[in-house]
Amino acid sequence: MSKTFLIVAAALALGALLALAQPATGDRPLVPYPDGYRAWRHVGSVVNEATDKNRATTPHGTIHHLYANDLALEGLRTGAFPEGAVFVADWFSLKEKYPGGFEEGARLRLDVMVRDARFAATGGWGFDQFAGDSITARNVAPGAAPKQCFECHTRASARGYVFTRPPL
Amino acid sequence: MSKTFLIVAAALALGALLALAQPATGDRPLVPYPDGYRAWRHVGSVVNEATDKNRATTPHGTIHHLYANDLALEGLRTGAFPEGAVFVADWFSLKEKYPGGFEEGARLRLDVMVRDARFAATGGWGFDQFAGDSITARNVAPGAAPKQCFECHTRASARGYVFTRPPL
Image (tube, rainbow over all chains, first blue to last red; front, side):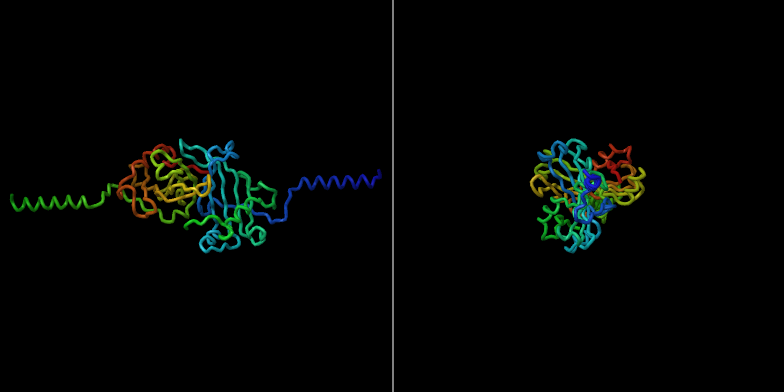
């Protein structure tokens, strides 16, 4: 083998290794972590019973709290969501507080949907999921779309892809 | 019988009738309805399974959301609750949203606790309950104390009678 071949092969191998080491960024803009969302308006909560799939980790089921920033509240009032509207679903396992009473246990994940015209492929909303308590770790590679978010939210396409319609 | 006796007796009878006609105001100041509490900080929620006592009206159990005004948040941060701190527990029956998923149904009541030195007999907190969606109807006569509130909250007397201690 020639020296040139070895150098080229080494460079290709290094490139492949570097490509593996890089997170797959996909072709989407990054959905930012929703700083300060705990001070946003609480618009409602949903309780889910444990399922066969998650009973081992969440035997008492889960709860997720829904928060909306001011632009999302404007959208809930008017029916049209302006750019920058953000909803958050803050997921927890339920833990027993006293017999028959349950409160938030460990945070499971934080779902975010942000109104941003760059996400035209998903209804003008960018969806993402932050893992557990992390403000950086995501449940899919940064820039990749968590598929199930948009798939499910298409059921509410007639309402701007937003499920919640609380009295405000 | 003398005329004087009859007049005095009639006056006493009239006084007794008027006392009966008045709502029993007890000896407590009135706990005001917490205007605007839905925009306060959501500090957590508690889910209660249906019990034998309430299964007929709330077969899927209840949820109550806890909200704190700015002074109550200050107390949660410092451990000392200033006058005017208010917590609210907003109670709903849980209704099935989809199989295994539950959200807020009808509002059951609104519990209020307000930090006010005039309520010295109940740990410096005034407790009250508004019935259903009403901003005026209370579950006990205006000015009377809902007994079970303070009785239960004495369990948290070492923490200023406040159960919740969320990370903020």
